[in-house]
Image (cartoon, rainbow, N blue to C red; front, side, top):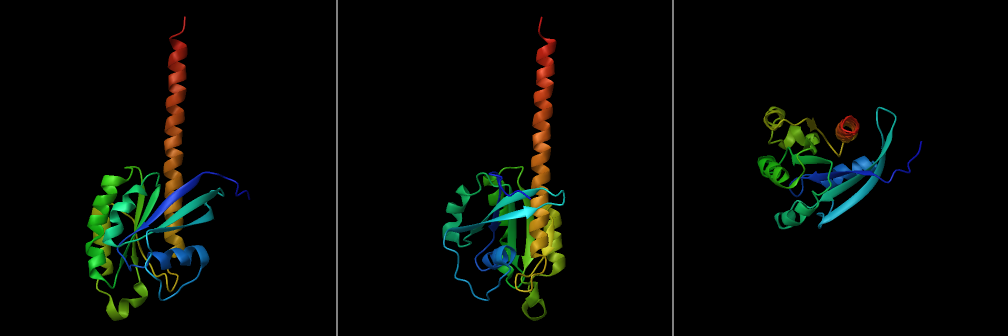
Length: 198
């Protein structure tokens, strides 16, 4: 199957520092996990070729963003051209969940209104010991924001591939719909122009 496409879906991983964005990305791209990663400074990105349910292969550009407050203003410039966002919080850290609304407000201000977003509740492998955000609370937030949600664990590889695949399929569907609308509009314009000729 060809992997020669130049067009790439751009996906951002967003969320507070230490929610596990780097671990989540590494599990997806390399199928590896480390208990301790240094905080991402600025941005890091990886490419991956993904096969869709339709059989089509797409190139995906995955951006791992720093969650620290001082990098938030820098992050704004990376919304440009983004097709999808994975917004992550840590189920063992209540503050990261409470800050999801702030992230959603920033996304609303900076990103395209056609961008696809999913919510990920990470670190469910720790839930029996120190979970502070319940599954029901996550589902309620997702419902109120109109977002799909995945309970996940980068450590145990739970719902990591599934969440990325879901988002990528949704992005492809959105782009296909937009392209079809543009094609229909162009065809209608051509027909109208022909009718006006004499």
